[in-house]
Structures are given as structure tokens and as C-alpha cells.
Length: 371
Image (cartoon, rainbow, N blue to C red; front, side, top):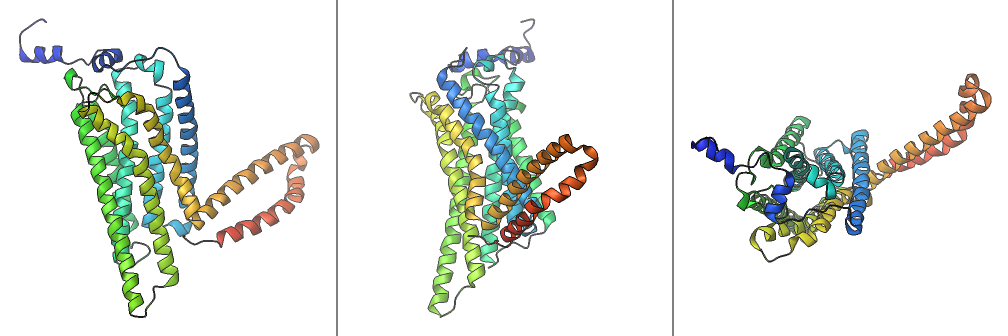
């Protein structure tokens, strides 16, 4: 030290210029020097899941954009949830190439960015699910299928969700970490303060319970209303009642899958803070893969529960396959008859394929209903 002033003392306490190995050694989290078979298996599985997650959620976003029947607030929020899942897939893909033996080569800023991506995607997912739960609660109690909320208001809500998500992901990098207080470092997340992890896990679990309470209230109200109408000899509109309950079940399944996949990770974060004897590191990588798998489940839930979404996704995939086939067919013809005859040849060859395809797409488009 070159002085006795307070700022100098603070500088010696903080460890901003230390390598990543310093924090891992301080928190007693081992760093591996090679890719073990177990680590390769987990990372390989994670990469496969992340690639599927990115592609599937991109399809969901395109489907909602292309199909005018999805141009309602609830589907805009679902598209935003797909965007959060898309980011989750990208964040895990980035993590896979910056973990294991590569971790010790990271700088503090890169490590914070790596973790911040995951935190941002999770926060965005939680905030989206909360917004969907509130939207469903308001809509059902107003006896409507779709909210009358304006597009401008939905855009504002989506913007607030992402501002909050980015802020939550950036908080540790902005100062709420253990760089200046090594004794408060977490074992699972060596540069994060245990106080931040406690706040993050408890706040997410609290939001989970709020959403459960909202959906429980919705289902109790819908069942009670149906029972009261039945007592008076009245009946709910078949189409609106079926669609409302179907959409409710779909978003409830999405919420349930999210809670099942993410709650174990939240719990072991709390165990890391409050249970020193618990071996949380053994379960860490498996629970992270489970959490990332949730982002791949939502497109599957949408397509299995919503006939209109399934039809739109099938139409998109079918068109992509046909386009690739048509391009390949064009290259074959071009190589055999020359470029000058390609257009005429394609026009004569592709009609047999286009006619049944057009009929099939029309049938798929007419199959819209929410179950």
C-alpha cells in the first residue's frame, strides 16, 4: 500500500483485477482442467437442447407474426415469452463454449456477461408469465376470450419486461457481487454475493406463488360460474367457453412446466446459502440443463395444445421444405438444360407439386380452434 487513506484501503479489499481462479479457490468450487466424460455428456445434451430451443422458439415467433388470428395481446405476450426462451437457448449455447476448462481463461467481465445472459432470460420468462397470468385474470373476469388492450399498451408492457430483465441480469456486474467481500461469495456462483442470490431466488419463488394464486382463482371462478349457470338452466357459449378453457389450460401447462423445471435450481441456490453441509455442486449442472430444457418445452406445448398454432407451424415447416426442394430441383434442371430454359422448365414441373400442397395448406388454415 502507498498510503493510509480510506480509498486506498478500499482498493486493497476489492479484487477486480484478480483472475477467475482466485474467486473459485476462495469459494472452494473446483475448476476442471480437462473435459471429463460426464462434463462432455452434460454439455453435449445441453447444446442439442439449446439448438432445438433457438429454432423452435424462432418458429413460434414467426408463426405469431404471420398468422393474423394470433394478433391479440395474449399471443403477443406468448411471442415475447418465446423471445425470452430464444435468449435462454443462446445463453446456454454461449455458456457451453465458456465453461469447463475454459472457465479459468475468462475475465471477470466476460464471466459476468455469461451469467447475466442466463439471469436476463430467466427474469424475462418470469415477467412474461406473470404478465400472461394477469392478462388472463382480467380477461376471464370480464368474460372475454381476448383482451381489448391496445397494441401500444402491449408494446409498453413488453418494453418494461425487457428493461427489468436486463437490469436484473446486470445488477451483479454493476456492484451487487462479492468482489469486495470475498467472505460473502456463493459456492455455486463464485462471483455472486449470497445476499443477491437469496434476493433473486426468493423473488422468483414469490412470483411463482402469485401466478399459482391467480390461476387457481381463475379456474375456481370459471367452474363456479359454469355451475351457477347450469343451476339456472343456462349454458356457456360452446365456442367461447371451450376456447377460454383451452387457452387457460395451455398457459397453465406452460406455467406448470416452468415451475417444475426452474424450482429445483431456485431451491439449491438457497441451499447453497443456508446449508453448508449440502453438496449442491453435484446437482448444479443437471438442474441447469433441466432449467434450459424448459425453454424447449413451450413450443411443444403450444403445438400440442393449440390446433391453430400447430397448423401454422406445420405450414411454415412445409413451405420451408418445399422451398428447399424447389431450389434443389431448379439446380438440377439448370445443370442439365442450361440457364435460359430454367424458368420454363420449372413452371411445367412444379405444378403437380403445388396443387396438392395448396389444398393441404388451405385445409390446415381452416383447422383453427384452441383446445
